[in-house]
Image 1: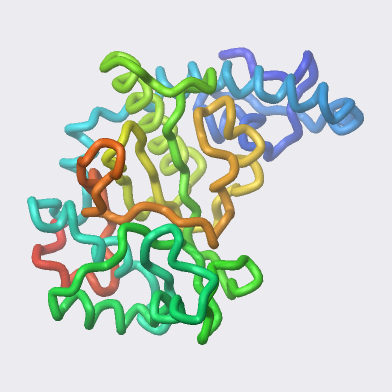
Image 2: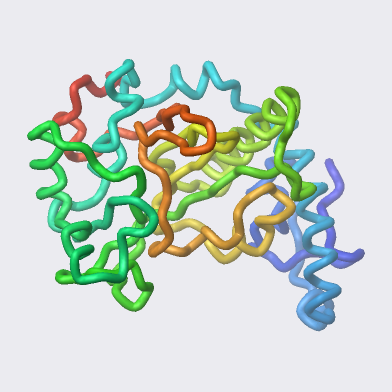
Length: 282
């Protein structure tokens, strides 16, 4: 039996995202509740938690590697040259009546920006007419009549985005090997979140820059736990649970690289039949 991960020598609380090895890392054993963990100085606890998460990451990479070719092949939605750059493949996962924002990052806060907040069914009509979406959306659902992406205008946040654009040491990859390492880490953590944490994966997007983003359904996801260990896993902590923040859509052109964001994996939504492709039969 593999030794359970510990926090500064203490067992992690039962149910913690990294604490229950049998459920989350697949190695057998159990972890008892440790009151000592709760009594730790917050700064010391944070330092120890990140060290524990870095050790956990090594196990995740070893046990949950997900090859890029397998990611594409296993996509429930067939991602041909059209679908992999189709923003509607992502937006179609929202309810048709949900008010969703799309646009450029600065399209928020002025009366004229009310046009960037539309029910999803209206965005579908825009797509059907061949008009282009903005480069970004937000994962939150907004109040009708909104003109700002303020969190005060949110009425729900059905999706949580895991954004991988730095290595776990906080640096951005500057070489092909570094980018390959980032992608390997990202895909392993995504697979682990899906299969071990039982997160409901919605989409995996290569952003057109160096990073990868994954959309998960918020319902049932340990958002607080992921946010707590985000730095050690190479995740953007500030984006987790922030439904008002802009996130890139498929087909968007990355300003720094000139490359388009492409879907690597996408789930089949209620409205997937409207995409110019067919759901992969299972």
